Length: 125
Image (cartoon, rainbow, N blue to C red):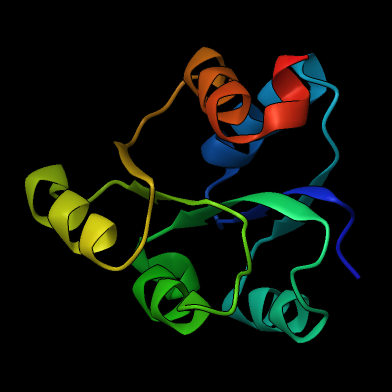
């Protein structure tokens, strides 16, 4: 079962390092799904307690498919999309499907920290 806090779905080691650093700086628990299989296992546990979901849209974790699967089932947790693909194409796609933001990679730990503080109310206190 995922811990309360942040769920990262990404197979990108650079993204995981940056998000881990940002989560540590904001004292937020982080659960990481590195493959589509791990992400689906997380989905089966539900989304209770998650207050932020970061989804890498890139093909290594079938990100667009997973993002679409999140649909309306992610509860109140805001979803932030990440992409190394053409941001001008992916951003409108992600936003039209419910993401609160779409960030082009690479993304720094400082930027992830800001996202956590913006969308994870407990982190800002």
